[in-house]
Length: 252
Image (cartoon, rainbow, N blue to C red):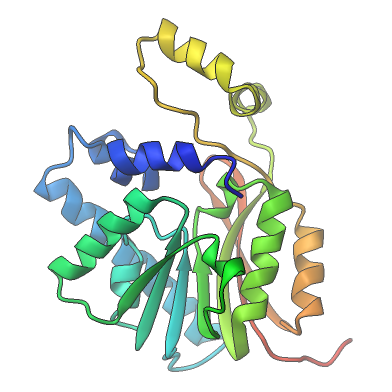
């Protein structure tokens, strides 16, 4: 899981907002007050959509006590979750990202948030959660590790708890671009040469992976997440946003 830690530490130090939403207006040199306001407003809008999905299909008047946001970055989604939950734990692989997220919460006087390293999911007891969430995050994690993380989500999710996890599962229409990105991902030296030729500095390649949803659904069934809603997404890749509740259901 730490293979790309240096990559995320680089972005956490140099371009933390752009690493979350890869639009030029969120690059450090362009990030003005208007762009930052738009950045955090997008997080608020996302959580409102997630809540509507949960309340319409899984749990009316959903009000979790403890929420987990995995891959929290600079806190874009932790901030609105702090107004929905009694306690929010943001988890990320980058210490730089976590520090910026903590600062963003402090600026807004949010006292019900805390942060942890990604490895803490496995290395210490972080308790149970009523809500686990990860959006446009898992696609950057090798499925070999990502499936272990997904299973850990299900282990720390309390009975009756809700998960909202986004995964990519399909190759983009432009298969050549996808294969080229895989070369840059798996052979970092080629990406460094590309950056040198383009005078792009030392910016590393953001890794991208796709998941086998069959394996994910087997885990959901294993941990009695019998109620599951799938919503498809398109971020340049075929994605599935899974909304599920940890509650045994009758088998058909």
